[in-house]
Length: 486
Image (cartoon, rainbow, N blue to C red):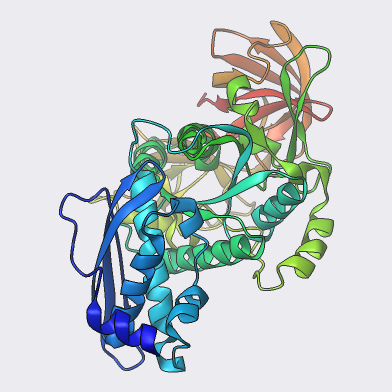
């Protein structure tokens, strides 16, 4: 235990770097009830930790572990440092007793938080030289992203695991925070198993600005937005796609079930459905452009979910399967009502009218409802009634029978075409009006630079303003638009 005594008593690296380039902290209550904490501060040049100091408290084990880890990482590459584990500390200091094992996690988490702090900042230059064989893989701690990493590693790519921190610091829902902590732990475990560095990148501020706030404002307008589509465009394949360049990665990979292929005929990148049509996620990527698609890899598009799940049990049996119907990541307990209530001071009840203008009920706030909704209307009628239309300016909901929800056409705005232009001013395609809906044969007529009208061969039910209408020809996704209110 000579090393332990040396590091716990000498404290070679104790102190704090005032003008530090990065800070990493971690606090964990121990089994004995005391608080184990560590604060790391470092000077970093490019990808090398030039100097690092620690402040720690709790017991001699935290002091020794903190001094040990700071000695290990000085003058080391930051990505190499992410591969360090509690075992490396024990190899140096000796095995920790069971009641002190939490100290190892505390120190490693503080180091990873320091690296997160550094790489999440807006850096003026790349930390690493860009490498065409280097791929950043977005890791959520789930089966799909873990297997995408496994496949790409087996294909010879140099990988960096990346987990996004998206929930803002003022996000108070304990369940969501707990889930995120579990996701990080699992993603890191997967990364260590396949021997790739793993980092966390904090994009919570742009996520709040570009995704959470617009989502809330759209609901106030009586719309039903799709924040996952926006997140893919502006966060994952927007800000993150640029951010990974600083790590030297030329490509970003995800666990999406879709295919991205370069057409031999046109030379353009095409977005195609995944082989597993029941799991296809191309719909969520309709807003992407050629520049983005040229730098994205989606290896799972070539496989069925069944096969991926089967293989994951061999490679990563410790992964807990997530619920496929999991809702939007920032909605507490998957409750839209709770989310909206937490952000509104005055919630006004209003009238529910039938299609002839008769008052048939009272709603609890129009933003709690969506087109096609039947449950929760509180209407007593001889035939089932559904939300047909939401009029936010009048604080009115119009309800009708199922036949009243059928529409032959719709209009879209914010048009985007994967090939950068439509096939023609008027063209036919199969159209999906929501992620889980079936495709419907339709005619699309371009009416403006970013607008179009869609005419269905057969009327569609519960067309919902704010959702996405996406166009397909066979397996190829042509483009899409956001459904407008009539």
